[in-house]
Length: 239
Image (cartoon, rainbow, N blue to C red; front, side, top):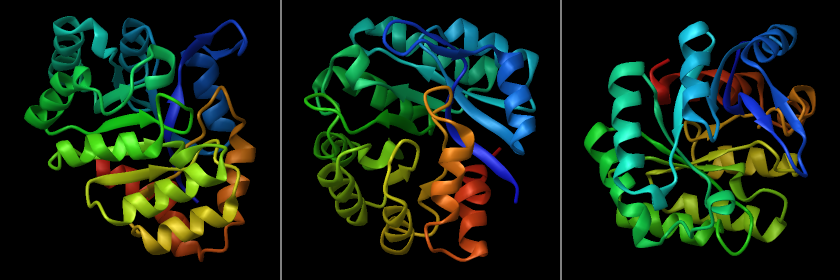
């Protein structure tokens, strides 16, 4: 089964995580696990730009945008989308310490709307990245496609909230990485929408095989798994 990784990181994360891949190492791992392409981001956008430049057929870039950087963040998004072919924006409320529904995020959402690109937002960690705050942002910008990365992450209450809230918003999509409940992948696919759930690894934080297996055993038929692993994100980002 063909696969596109909807959420991964090229680069090194120090401190408590102590994990990372160079672009070459990630391509080797992608080959090992049959992954055609990875949607990647990293705090250093220049590193992602180099990776996409070296392996344009294997990586699709997202601009990591810190809303506190104001015009600088907006300018980087515009340049990387227009000049480097980046596919969207990555927001990390936890690491950059902002709540998703704070007005400081609005200039980046306005830019996403103007460029017609999606915004991928880390979810699942209080107080900054809870599903309800992400959905409030999506409500404020109904023309922007918002991907709730991790679909609530490791807390069952947040996972259920991600699904229940996404059901009611056509512009909210869910990504599976790091979310431990295989049954919720099936529930999301059947209740949120067959085109609105993407498989991701969150590599290097999670192992490709573990993330694949959770989706493979979620109880959906092969045709549905093909959508989650490949077709949905391919069509969503026009890869």
